[in-house]
Image (cartoon, rainbow, N blue to C red; front, side):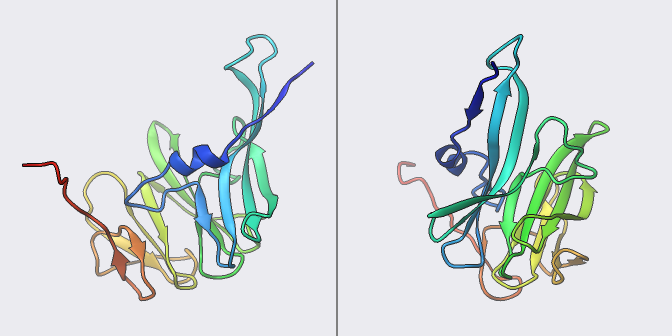
Length: 202
């Protein structure tokens, strides 16, 4: 008999896959009060011949929490092993827009021995997805506190330019800033960043 294992995700994903300088997170605050989106595994089935830790099936999902966590729904789910990233969205780094129901997904994967980054868009709370763009290299995306405004820049390598979209990722134009980072304010190209020094250094 196959054993189904529900993967406990909430505490693990709060610490995993996060980047202090970016919004590459598997948790995103939604536009509605008390709304969160979580991207992580749903369940897995161990391989019947090899057993743990080898999985025969692994399903990933996008979860939506409302009412401050009282209600949890699976908005979207797919197979981690067989989903074709060129045609179907694979939940990864979730970003929420200031517009109700608008969510982005930044998926990074390997194709032809090169890193590729995709930006996916949903305007129905993560149920249906449309690819906005795919780029070679590791692009990082940042949602903002303004409706339809999203930024992108390179994660690795030279930070030569950064781009913004004011139409939900349909098209991007170069910004006045060469580096996009941290958290965003309520103005176009307004960013906040916290830094400090080690008090134990002499």
